[in-house]
Length: 479
Ligand code: ADP
Ligand code: MG
Image (tube, rainbow, N blue to C red; front, side, top):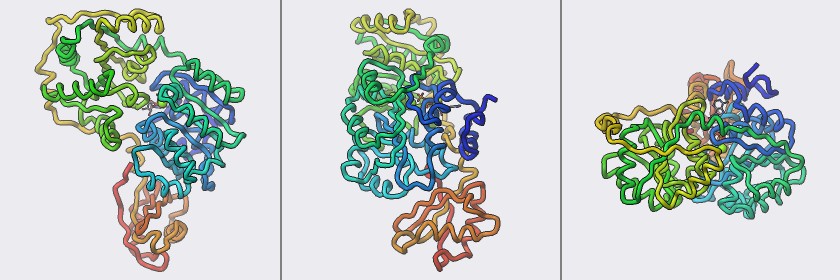
């Protein structure tokens, strides 16, 4: 058996994985899941894109107990974007189990997060700064936490979150499982591991060789004044379906984006100075295929998952050897072929050498030949093509899950049990068919599972809830 059923995980989770299209575990999942289920500490190291999120999300969802009100698992992420992405993955995997997965990060109203945390929560995902903030305000109770995941640990340290991480760990009960995931493990991380993990299982998946096989790498020498011109020629020649373009600074991201747009190339950008809501919107837009080229700085781009990028461009050469591996790892995923093209100026030559020592092979130097320029018209035509929006991940859930809005909320003392009671009185509907219930001030949202939404919605038009006939409607799902 090569599918997920070989692990001891419940059908609700297997069903969710099927809807997500996860038919077989990836290599890191294969090894992490059984050990995580047994409660042993883990250090997991593997390339970006190898499925580390589900490797810890599946055991977290399996171990979660719905009856508990205080969170039993905490996942720390270095950036807000990753927090949102990882929350969604955990939420999808735990959806059939009706798990509540609040996310907390800065740049977002804390009051709303406090409201959400007051409700039942099973797995909290957040950035260290905001998590600590909630702990200090006593809006997040860590006293029941049994499992902590430190994801993208190397980046967490790079971003200077070490003190917050230590402080958070000091609030967690002694008896807990700690899992740490990283694409690279440096000295400082080793120290942290020694100090906080007890007899951890080291799980390492070497994929350097595979990376080399699947990703065509090219380096072009250029001078700063000619960089943009050469870049545009390469972009036109390659005419990528979609790609990421990395720059060294926020300023450069701005400049490049402006230039490309001026030249008629549709693109989006993310970096740390862009407003949080805009960043999330840009990432969603890129995922849906609203534009093909995303220009980014490293920090914001790290760990964010985009399927099927055909190309990665290093407009600015990376300034760290690991960074090179992370950046090019955005392409050539899941057995697809990819191309990574880097521009190199004089001051980058030393770094190129360091990267070559690190990866153990020479990066091929190429020269741009005008006769290989390709058909520019094709490129410009593609810029004008109407976009076909891609399906969002988790779209498969919508077929079987319907979200209903019910008139009446906290103000009229509506409680989840009132709704459950009425719904269960409908013939052929049981508590198993009811998903998450979210009681707001004057409105309550309830998810109906197993494709029974329509039937429940119709029945509720004529049934009273808490003694009154309520306005019940189907609403758009917001995930
Ligand atoms: P990492 O954290 O290692 O960088 P992610 O967890 O972000 O990687 O996963 C990379 C991509 O692989 C995501 O799009 C995810 O949905 C997909 N994925 C994860 N596990 C599986 C699986 N078992 N089968 C198919 N796709 C998977
Ligand atoms: Mg990850």
